[in-house]
Amino acid sequence: MTAMHNPPHPGVLLEDYLGATSLAEAARRLGVTRVTLSRIRNGHAAITADMALRLGLLFGTSAELWLGMQASYDLWTERQKPRPEVLPLAG
Image (cartoon, rainbow, N blue to C red):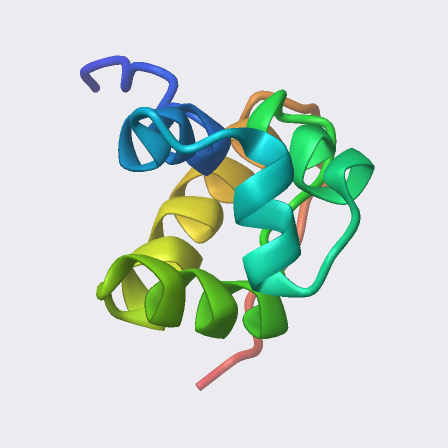
């Protein structure tokens, strides 16, 4: 099995989309606090469905783009943790 590399937290891409726009201005347009947006940008908070919709509107992207990146990041992170054995249902 080939090892997968850690997908980036979507906050990393957020930095690219912001370009020259300040975090404070983006937060104002999104209707959230600068702290909220900063936590996402720094990988300390996840992108929720609500935030994905807002980011889609702000940047002209799809909400699915943001949620997909978050899901990829979350799944990779969880796969790094030990898991109890789960027995499949007989079928």
